[in-house]
Image (tube, rainbow, N blue to C red; front, side, top):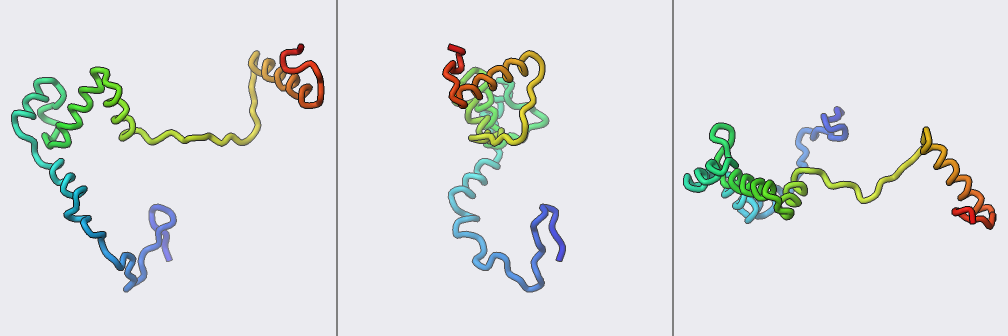
Length: 138
């Protein structure tokens, strides 16, 4: 049996039903679907003209949907320095940063920083072995 382009996907066997319950109720006409339909509709000309005049919507490239108008306004607020708009844009565009980073392997520090790290490690090793001087050398 072959593996799909995503590595672990296996094509269905003839006659196999992968989703016996079908779409969830409201998937086609629920609130989220309705909002998506509304956002894809063309926006009123006066709103389009206002954003074009402000330089937030180009005439050739952008489709003047409600979603484009909202995005243009949000971008305009972010450019003006509105922190909430910047935060919202980055939350939607950039992937979230990991909460913690796991480091494995050896750490190699070179140059003067390497000497400083080695000296600190030696002092810390002395503290852990019962040396009564401590980290500061006192």
